[in-house]
Amino acid sequence: MSTRRRRVYKGCLENNGQLVAVKQLDRNGLQGNREFLVEVLMLSLLHHQNLVNLIGYCADGDQRLLVYEFMTLGSLDDHLLDLTPDQKLLGWYTRMRIASGAARGLEYLHEKANPPVIYRDLKSSNILLDEDYNPKLSDFGLAKLGPVGDKVHVSSRVMGTYGYCAPEYARTGMLTLKSDVYSCGVVMLEIITGRRAIDTTRPTEEQNLVTWAQSFFKDPNRYPQMVDPLLKGDYPVKALNQAVGIAAMCLQEEASVRPLITDVVTALEILAMDPGGSKDTHNTPPSPVEEKIAVEEIRRSVEESTEDRQCAVAEAIEWSSHCKDIQASAFRHLYVYMKAL
Ligand SMILES: Nc1ncnc2c1ncn2[C@@H]1O[C@H](COP(=O)(O)OP(=O)(O)OP(=O)(O)O)[C@@H](O)[C@H]1O
Ligand SMILES: [Mg+2]
Image 1 (cartoon, rainbow, N blue to C red):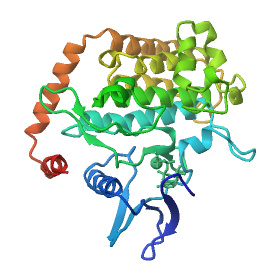
Image 2: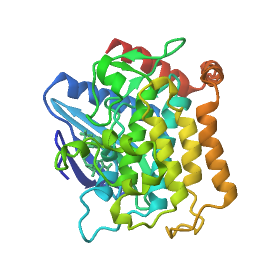
Image 3: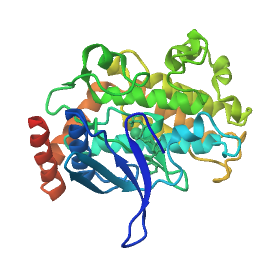
């Protein structure tokens, strides 16, 4: 597996035969070393079924290696874009399950970690899949500890990947949890359309996925034109409307009106329920009850006052700041450390 900036090797641990992925970071540069430290610290302290496991690392001389659990099916982009003829096509419900799991990983970072963590690098190549297509977020080198107390943003040099970056972050360097929600909207679009966030091989007006998709958002009758042609129409139409609706909300220009990731998770979990079991059989509409719940959830996330929600989050943060478990105190050490970096 080769990449732009670094190499990833498949390996096997001698003592127990476990398969691992070994990532060799760029040898030169302060940024590489910083990313290495942040990745090791973050993944040592954060544990969730939708975050990749760090098994070990090596910092010897200028060599920086990270050893992860091996994710059998590689990254989401391998399954969505530039498919080889022998690759299995991702069905609609598998796509929704992947979106839902990735959003759950983000929810853990935003709502459960204390202080919250802004992931900053959500994109389809950083969503890894195990043998059952369960998604896990990887690459925490760019993650930032989020704002604490009354603050809603942290300032930072603009990093991340072009095409996934929230517009206000790209403009001002002001990073909020809502920057990740924006990137989640871009990934949703990739999942729905099978297109890259930026694709310079397409006609000019189609090169930027968000700009292209925005021209469809206002007219649900045109949503089917956005869908990945490889699905050959094999998706539930009403669920498509809801999926596009979620993406559109995440992609709103005004960061404060984007939904919280928790609302996105609730809505996506409903869309990920396959009424035909796990066989990814399509065209079976969601039951009227499920559909109603999904629509209600989406509506609620828009209508409920942000003030109430901020209060709830503040209470949760306040509550967890009193929590004296080791994890929380370790996290506070990390916070002090990262401020010093
Ligand atoms: N834990 C893992 N298990 C299996 N494959 C992995 C693992 N980590 C990475 N890979 C593979 O290596 C590829 C490259 O990953 P890498 O994170 O180095 O690059 P990237 O995500 O494409 O770009 P960026 O450097 O911006 O993160 C992934 O797309 C995936 O196919
Ligand atoms: Mg990556």
